[in-house]
Length: 332
Length: 274
Ligand SMILES: Nc1ncnc2c1ncn2[C@@H]1O[C@H](COP(=O)(O)OP(=O)(O)OP(=O)(O)O)[C@@H](O)[C@H]1O
Ligand SMILES: [Mg+2]
Image 1: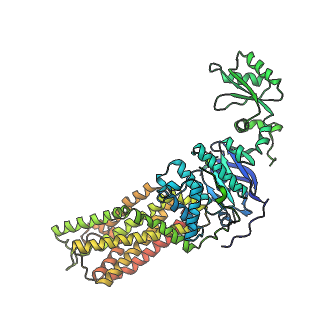
Image 2: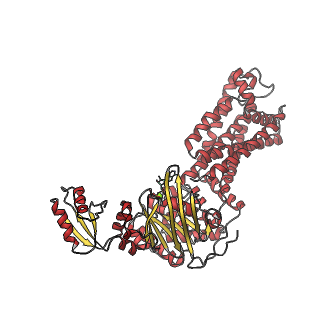
Image 3: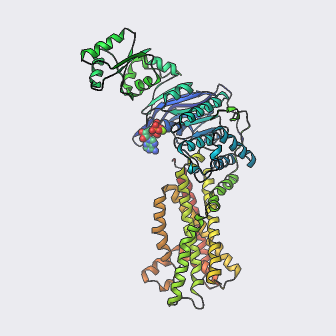
């Protein structure tokens, strides 16, 4: 069980090449290609069912791809799963710890399985319990933990073996704000030391803060990838955000804006309509278009696009990708 | 929470080199057995059915007198105890399958799958834990039978030990059948149903509680082809020192086949993605 020499720094640590996964009639992944270099964070952004967990499953050698090729730390997932498992840590979407054991026992068990002696295993467990602020509950059975505590234990569990590559599937779902920030700091610390991280998330602030590059998945396909800045730029430099009066019909407003050759984006939580514009004078065009159908915006703001806007523009309306300004699949 | 990342892993810290399968099995067996120590209710609950059957049947038959084809010179207690131990062995085997399903459900299997360990280690650990549990329960039943009911089989200590050994072998091999069922079904309810629908009738349609000759004809016919009959006849013959040791070989064969088939199926079933 010798560890083969790890790839040198700057090496590609996570790579998927035209990976597809079909479940019966569902195409969960459709020719997805991604790559991440050592010591970087790659964020996978996507709706429920976009294929994030499936891709994590393939990269961690838990699921065979239907077609395509994937490698982690230079080892092919199909032929070298063992070498991959020696180098990765996985925090799945659903906590995977033994509820019958205490937090400490869980970590000791994993360390022992990875080959640590009793003493080293206990030391590693204590180190991680402290890092994740689990000291107070360390001796309680994990099944008595709150959701957030369980999540933290799960994260600690994925770090036991000092992995070179960490997969975090929606790691901060269910964490309170301070635990989220704590996790971000831990991830940043690991990355600074050369660990490579693949993170799936639905939180854009998380991707914006942690990720060196972001891949947006929609219905199993990569619809955009690049840095946060590149993605923002792709939506158009500026946007106008219009909030309607409750009485006005958003569909009417959208139709009017389309009429005026604009490409309004809906779907935001607060119901606002986002309209990418080329220049500031286009604000007047927005107001005129709405005025034509008798709608007056309750609130109108002008600004740089947020990652939210990017996400909605790209993920909600895949048809728009036909426009050349948005075709940036190859910018990684 | 403070974020002192200085203590986190770095690739420069030497990583552990993994562990041998033997070591993995040892660690995982320890984990499965832990419940026996930290949660004695598990053992008590497992003992419930065999012990109730033991006390009820001995009471009933001490009142009714033995059935017509009962072997001469043997008390009902002596007759039924080896069958009660087989019942205990079967119940424990069912529990090993349920234990595997619980592992699959609570996520620990998902975690282990991402580690560089041999997947069968977990299955083997379950199987060994089942054996230990079965043995602990068998000893408790024996102690109860000797101290409370006055069990004193004619076979002598060595013979009783051989009988218990064979019983444990049967428990171990049936354990593989239920581990396989757990690996394929992956849900606890069908396993429990299987235990009730299959195991209970199997015990009654056998030589367990009354001699086959005293069973209704159709039940006797089922009992004659029931593999448990061989196991019970063999362990009973050993413990009581009565003829019937000819059933030991078929019982061993039956156990061996179940174990081999169960283990193979279990490995394949367990391999399927979650
Ligand atoms: N075992 C399976 N059998 C059939 N279909 C599946 C299976 N696993 C996933 N799918 C389907 O594949 C698609 C992608 O699922 P996946 O779990 O990868 O999405 P996700 O991006 O992780 O979603 P979420 O944000 O909800 O976790 C979905 O349509 C899902 O229904
Ligand atoms: Mg998911």
